[in-house]
Every structure is written in structure tokens, then in C-alpha cells.
Image (cartoon, rainbow, N blue to C red; front, side, top):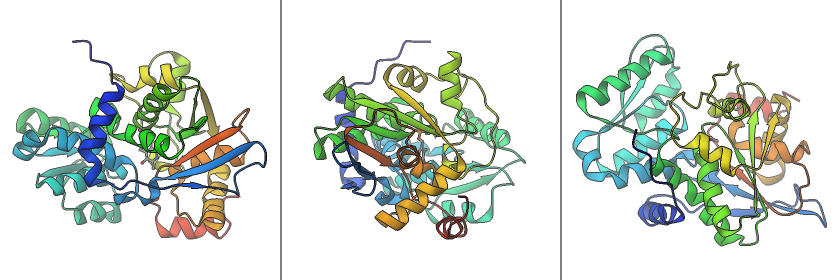
Length: 327
Ligand SMILES: *Cc1c(COP(=O)(O)O)cnc(C)c1O
């Protein structure tokens, strides 16, 4: 395999210029309720306010616009039915390109309809995620659609890194950024921006206890699979890929600390965000705040930013959690 070019700050600024007109510049808001007087000043970077409800629109838009001609000629494909799938469908529609989302029969109707409503073509194959993935690979091979990877792609990572650029613009004196970690595209992009500005700034990764694939992979020194159990942070599920090319090394090099949070801690953070900040966060979007509330981030001081990465939670789950369940 040809060694890949490293992703640079320049790539992040190129992404920023490319996607700027097509995404929302999200607010950074101070959070008195999470700040410790005299010690840590905590602010929230609200990707809950992003179009399609999560930061993933940044990476998907950067990929689709950077490869515009090819994408318009051939279309794009993904297997995600969550935030990445929504982002790909939305970004493809805006350039007038075909988007195909492959999924198994087991995907619930509401998820299917949400993707369909964004104009994507749904292809239902088999009874498991692997069947959906095989179909996506076939579309790439035989019909030459472009696969938009949810995290392990330089354009996607650079797109997510625009979150980091915006944080630095709004709070140049940021000391610590706390970020949800799954495949590692978001935290890699943010860390590239942050460490370029200040190598001493700290990047903290947060994942749910059950199914922390990147965390276990970093510990093992190679990509490993972990068993998944249902979690409030469903958007953080999935592996990092045995053939991981970018994010495993970036996370290893750039992440300073890892925190694992429990389901009860995630529920508490969702409740806290709603009651104190009037922010509706999904479980995966609330883990950074969960880590702070549970006091699991050691030596927290100075200017702290918690990235609240998404707000796509179904109302049944949300009302149950906010009413006090999962304590
Ligand atoms: C995808 C996702 C993440 C994790 O991003 P990675 O780039 O896979 O680490 C975090 N929060 C939300 C809401 C997501 O949709």
C-alpha cells in the first residue's frame, strides 16, 4: 500500500473553506453549571445545533464537495443508518448526487424513513449489518459508487477538524477539549487543530464502558473487536476496522487521556444538559459532559470545552431519561 500523506492543518482550512457555506458554524456557550469556581471554566461546543443534528455533516460534506464531479457522476454509498447516513444523504442531495444507503431488514422503520426523507435511496439486503456492508462493497466494485467512510478517510477527518478550528476561534486560550470517541474521526480532526495551535493543550477521549473499540485497540496496540451491548450512546457503537488506515494512529499519537462512562452517567449528563442548559443531546453526544459530571477527568482546570456531538435521540428514550430513568 502506498503510504498516505499526513493530514495537516492546511487540509483542515481547505475543508473549512469548502464546507463553510453548507454547514452551520455552531455556538460555543459557557456552562456555569459545569464550571468549578476558580478552577475549571467549562464551555459547550453545540454540534446539536448542526444541520442533520450532528457534526457528521462536516466530514460528509467535505468528502462529497471535494470529490464533486466524481460524486455527481457516480453517486455515493454508505451503510450507516445513523448520524453518518443522514449526513451523507443530506450532503449528496445538496450537490444533486445519488446516495444509496444499504441496510439489513432488521433496521427499524423510523430510521429507514428518516434517511428516505433526506432523499436517499434505501437498499435492504439480508438480515445483518455484514450483508449490508457486502452490498455496499459490491456497489463500489461493480457500479463504481464512492463509499463515504464514517471516520477513516482524510477528507472526513479534515471536515470534522473544522470543529477544532471553530473552538480555537471562539476560545483561543482553550486548555482541554473533551470529545466523544468511536471510530476516531472527530477527535483526530479536533486534536490536529488543537495541537497545531498549542502542543500542550490536552485532548480527552470519552466512550461508553461497553464496546469501547478504539480504547481497547489502543491498549492492545492493534485494532481489536469488542463485544457490543445496547447503550444510550448507540452512535458510538461499531468497530474501528482491522484495516484501519488513519484514525488508529492519529488517536494513538494525539489523545492524551481516555475516560469510560457508565449508562447511568450518560443518562445523568443528558438530564443535566436538558435541565440546566436546555440542550437536547443524544447519549453519544452527552458523554463528554458525563465525564465531567462524574469527575472522571483528572486535573481538570483552566478553559475546558466539552464537545456535545449530536442531538438525534428518539423522543421515547429522551422523555424517559429526562423524567429521571437510568439514574
Ligand atoms: C459518530 C459520532 C461520534 C463519534 O465520532 P467518531 O468520529 O466515530 O469518533 C460521536 N458523537 C456522535 C453524536 C456521533 O454521531
